[in-house]
Length: 553
Image (cartoon, rainbow, N blue to C red; front, side, top):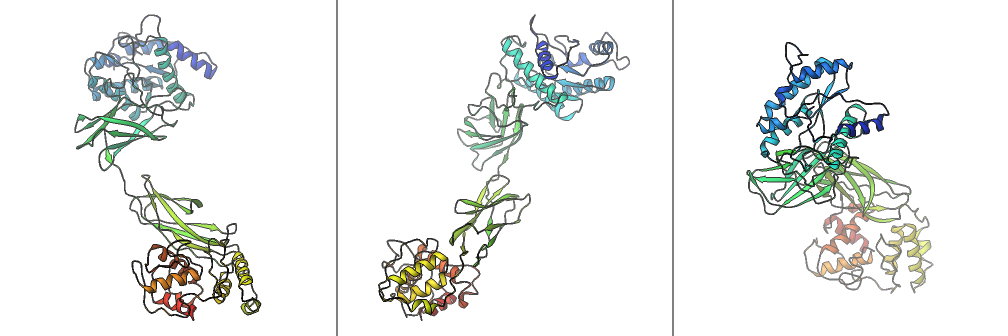
């Protein structure tokens, strides 16, 4: 240890108090510290480990005198920073020291990172701090101690005030507790990636940590960003997820982007990101961390047309296939805004996902189903919705003739019976009766819509056959006749206004296409001429024309 605070100031009694409260056992520290030393001063005499003329030999003798210790707590490096020692040299000597301690005593060394020093250059501070941090990560005999780069020290290099001493003691204890007493969290957040968007205006930082979310909620500082080595202006830093920060630049970067936290003295007194553990451990420093371009391409997802059951208590099988080259994290199926299948996850690209939708508890009608895919970069894509017919209610078994012959010409009882048939889900019989008495059916996904009273007059295209195909964008009288047909069959182009019953137009627009698709889907399994349709198209082609003309006879 190399700790030289002002007289009467020390973190060790504070750490002992924390350890005693946690473990309920006596604790003692064996001091071997000497202030103002270099890492070179702590190297052992290779011929005589116990050479008392060396600092290592003095430590060696004291450890043996007490019969062994649990660990060495090492806090040193300011002198080497002043001397301008390189990162590589300091790390090699620190690792050599820790390896010697482990070889001689079978114990590991907990290494604290040096704090602020007002008369040091930023580069010299970075060299020692990064060397210590690198040794934490690379050598099993060097354990991570506290990060204290963010503490604004009132007295040059020594931690002296009660607040400063308690803060360092808490962080040192967190490291000790994690390594030796199964503590929850001993290190602060560590950066795992930095990615810029296509316009180079935003940079997303992702961290890993044992205890999230990152804190505080906002007001971060101590982060610097460079564009081709020149410090760029940061407009805002915002937390966008429990482990993510988003940097927004004042103007777009034009070259290579690097990002730093706590570089030199920029972290001193700053509001740096911390974890949410008991002691709010600060994120570990990084200097000129490289960035990569983020994936902003949404995955592609196609949703197959699920089967539409016509019997009670049915289950529909839904499936979606991702065609994205980026690994897809999952697909969720929705009916409207309600999820009808739990998210299916994957770690590879171009996978097929499937889930089942139990229709037992839903009302009969038409439902639009969509699939939303999410890739591992957080991009989303929504499939084109498919229309599913749910028909759980049992059909009415009475012959059509025995029902229709009892209707009066006024149409009132016919409308009532059609309404009852729709409520029971027997759309086929309801349409046959409606056609005979000229009743306009409601939309199938809204069977409670009021049915207009029967006028006992045929529809405008009754008995008229279509002779040409129609598609979106066309304008002619055949389109108007098609709209009238769809309205009469219960597939209203619009509930009111243009295209609604009695207000048909000559224009084939998106509303006409949507109504035609519902007709095609409903007749796909009931009309021979539409058997070849794999899915509703909204195109009034040969097969659809044949089916319509058959119904018009």
